[in-house]
Length: 209
Image (spheres, rainbow, N blue to C red):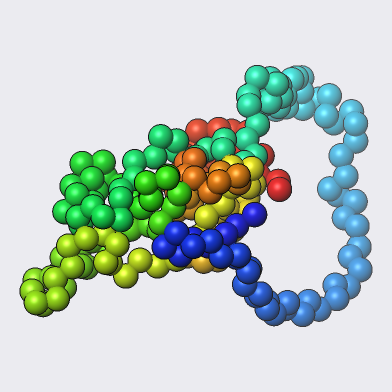
């Protein structure tokens, strides 16, 4: 479901094993029912007549109507950004900086000529390298592939959104490139912003894997 891409080389992803301490809960003593809180059916009718209770649950009806008309979303392909702007390993870091400035991206996929993923470069990577170049002109790095590119965690279009959100949280990554399961070419990208937009814009969000 998830794979690492390390400068074009595909590696399997092994999930981290987390050990969580479960707090002990003291048993609760049996409680005595409070008869004063019991409500007789006739009381509901009286409350309705005085306008304290709605005769119809309009919010529930509206939600049910929305369920029928809305498209449920489950997978990366439902929220991923398509037509991804990429950069070549042989491009200069100045080109990457220009794209970051113009598009307001934080991450930029690096792709080989065959559209397979080489890695990911972040805006922070470029800014950090610019500072290093100023401090050490003799060891100046100007080409993307000469940067210290970290291995990139990726997923497939049919990966559940719930799993992607969990992996992004566990691995502390800001984006997940989405690759074709057949040839590992890039199909899209899911960022934290994409997940947040889905939650904000869609009242019906299916996140069950």
